[in-house]
Length: 570
Image: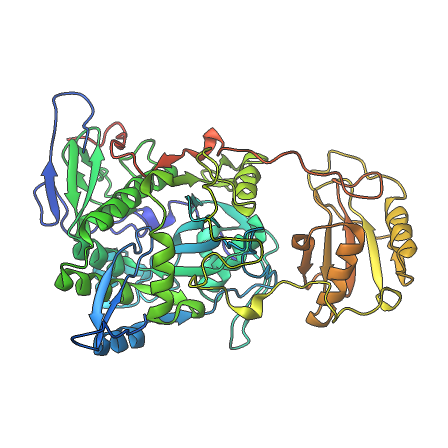
């Protein structure tokens, strides 16, 4: 897969990722200035159910998704409900082999939800082409230029959003399309926004799963015209800049965004320009663009909560139509009542417990990757671990479980669940007796960075542990590996339960069991975390707050204002 330079599609007047968009200047349609203050930085403030008596065909429902995607409320009649149901576009959830299954319930039976939000730059129709520019890319493969993981806590007390910069370089997993087309795992680093070209949004989900080991329950994808329609439907979103800004360089780069200092209410194409602006915000990199997207999303969430009231059915229907037409979702969200259930869960979180973050990153030092970034060792994993372990990123902890919640009892029975086929393997009754399970053990104790020497004879020691537990078909392999964390990989679905049984015998977590086409059977990779003893070294305690490098923004912060890059003021 060819790796694009981060600026390849931004050069010239029709730059793809930060390109020309008609309109949007100060005073242009879609922009309502609300300047405040003096010279300092600006501040700114289901189902169809019979309602009893009256019309039996009235359906009250709420469809909400936090982001440049959706977070709103809608009400419609039964026929309109059927129309919306037929308008929902779907695609496969996970095209990769590492299927962790859905999120698992906590001790109170409450289940978190992880939703991947994807912004596509597809130019596959006249409306998207007019908005996106870059004529040389028309009808070409899209890029997933916005990727954000939304985590809704199990107790619904808080919500976390983790953005991945689109210039992040990753190893891409093998992705298989429903029709059978196979995209092999990459042999080198690939820019993360190219994941969608490997079969669709399901491969973007697979890439996130591979990197973060976070089970992803759903995805929602939106394109250019969807952003414009949503911004118009809500009536505009307040945003703030510290100085007058015009995103346009002398050689034609930039989104064209032009706003006065202070707060402006933006909608339509101007909203899209804001979300795509790179040149003009902060240091002119994709990181600044991510921070601007966070400000927009938080503001949009507050606007939805203020404006999406059941007392205005015309506006609610407009929001509903815009939301449904804007999205592509996984098949687990293919009905209005499922979106209704999801919206009810999302609405439980107050804005003050929403935390927007960016994956901690470092600039890549690898040849040819100037300007690209990679996950920051240690701190990126800390952030992913907090999401995996359902730890609030704002440092305030979880709320008190509902009084009615008891261990083993579902706390939110209406919440949409993940697709059943992605259930993770367990050591259930389908596993063979230990004596019949063939296992290979490899010494991978040197770790991925190669700074530690492999522990001599470690594969034989762990093989002996398994033999003592009744696994008599165990071989200590002369072939080695390099893993920071011990992992068990298996080749076929028929081996899944047996691999889980091996993990249970060794005291390894279920998340350590992975399907892979790089092994022929069940292989235990003894990692850097298990250099001695009968069990792996337990990890250090998880952080209790997002690292400073995650650039956290609280959902109640209505004073956020974007810093402007020198040379982009007017």
